[in-house]
Image (cartoon, one colour):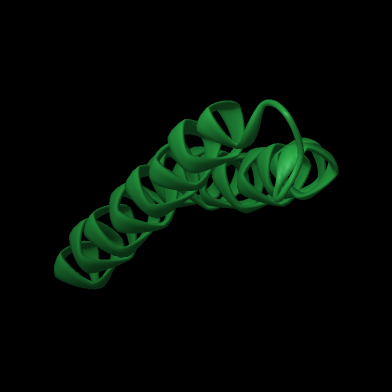
Amino acid sequence: MESDLAELSSVATQIDELAERIVAVAAKHQGGDRDDIAVRLFEVERSLYGAGRNLASAVRSYR
């Protein structure tokens, strides 16, 4: 079970890092000619953070 928690903790970190990277790209397009890309990328960010919250909830259930 500890190995599962370590694995899930690593995945949670990766989700946070991916969300940050997505935001960085979205910010470049926000307010520009391709604002539509920014909107979609911010939706991806919200989905990733939602996945992170669900993952954190699952991890708490392990304990």
